Each structure stands twice: as structure tokens, then as C-alpha cells.
Length: 215
Image (tube, rainbow, N blue to C red; front, side, top):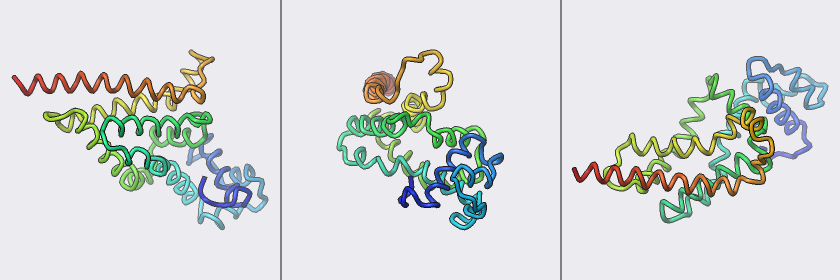
């Protein structure tokens, strides 16, 4: 959560906004419901602390989209692309699945945004995702070696990211098929699997690119 006193009215409204937006989406959520969830009788609280429902939603999105950058210092410190990839996977798994974060309201809001993007998404992508993606593209280019074009680099990034995000997006289905699976307890093992699986795939693509170059 943003750096503000946990018990403050603003913090309660922020948490309530996350919960209500997750349940109903931005369009159907009302300020009255958010204030009721925050246990504040003053329905002007959202306007007072955030300016409007729209600006509260934007602040929540900003929190969600900026979260990876707050945890990615570990990845940036690594010297080799292999260690960078392992750190990237570990950061994502902790962020998404530790303490059952994949079922959190913040994840639900992100899923809503992927299905029905708001007007804020473009700004969030430019500010937070684009620099991150450019850094990851450089990492995958080093992993693939000479001969890797932009399509191959991008596809590797998407393939790894898809594995990391699977439980977040498919949890309602997956949890019914495998009810005993606890992603909170298994997120470190999942990170190790994704890394090993991804390195195998990268090695195969690198070999194919090398063979293609030699023809």
C-alpha cells in the first residue's frame, strides 16, 4: 500500500477502493460503496482525499503498475543475463504469489484492465512497463546471442511472462482442477521450474538461430 498511516481515513479509502473496484470494475463501483467499505460516513471522503473516484482509481492503478519497479533492484544488480533472468522470475513470483497475492483484489483489478482497458493504461504502460520491457529485451537478446532478431527476443519475453502470470489469470479454473495446490507455499519452487523450463527453451531457440545463421 502507499506510504500512509495504515489506520488513516485515506488509507482505509484506498484499501476500500481496491476491494470495490476489484469486485465491480471501475464503471460499476460507486463512491458510496467505497465509503461504506471504508467505514466512513462522509461520502465526500473520496473527493477530499483523492479528488474524485476517477483519480482514486488512477492512484490504485499507479500503485499496481509501479509495484514491480519497487522490487526489481535485485534483478538489476545481477551481472550475467542468466542471473538477471532468475532474479526477474523470482521477483515476479514473490510479488504475485507470496501471501496468496494472486488472489488479491489488486490482481483482479489488473485482470479487469487487461480485459477492458481504461483510459489510464496508455500512460501506465509508457511510464512503468516500457522501461522494464526494454531492459528485459536487452537481457533476452544477450541470452539468445548473435542472430536474434526483435521477434525472437520479444517472443521469449512473452513466453516467460506468460508462465509467470498464468496462476493470476487462470486461478478460478486452476484452483478447481487442483484444489490442493498452494501457490503461496510453492512460489519459490514455481520460480525454479519457470527458470529451468525457460532456459531450456532459450537454449533450443539459440541453437536454431545459430544453425539458421550457418546455412
